[in-house]
Length: 237
Ligand SMILES: O=P(O)(O)OC[C@H]1O[C@H](OP(=O)(O)OP(=O)(O)O)[C@H](O)[C@@H]1O
Ligand SMILES: Nc1ncnc2[nH]cnc12
Image (cartoon, rainbow, N blue to C red; front, side, top):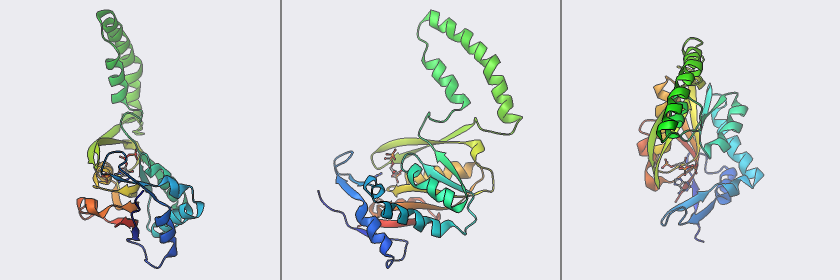
């Protein structure tokens, strides 16, 4: 296995926590596709000191910045985001992969995909009508009149180093004017973080910064974020 050396990026080079974090990340060549040097953070999680140092460095940066929301991108942002959110007294908002969050649009979609022949179609029409009367109307009332907004899901598509994907968020999870940090394990092309920023900004949230453990500078994800600040602990060289 070839070793990719990591160098500290945004944080103080003299902080010896960085070298421990850096050396705890395993690099796996040709995964999941030939040519990809996969940065595997599962080995960082096996080292409690490196894991704690990682969280501490983010907490030190964000604890006095009046952050209300830590948004974590599925899946690996769900590992680093929650401990940061708890430590700085912010809420954690999961940005999920498609069809994981309950929402009106997906309930209808799932029903329409399951009916193929005429009998089933009639059954579908009947069940759909019952669904509209029994569920849709109260649900619409629930999220428009009650102002909870919990059922509305918004999504953004994005391209990756090795494919395309989509992330989704519940609209009612955040409020206009709240201040957010978006957390993920790694920035490559910047597509994922850009999609997360777009989702939050569409509902009026101020994205203060993005925070990642690892940056792959060759893929120029930082450029894709434009003016948005990016804080990373280690950078591949
Ligand atoms: O900067 P980008 O080019 O957008 O790539 C970075 C994203 O890629 C990885 O996730 P992946 O999509 O592989 O999903 P996973 O965490 O569910 O494995 C990583 O955890 C980031 O979320
Ligand atoms: N090289 C890489 N290693 C780990 N996760 C990634 N996501 C996108 N590129 C990646």
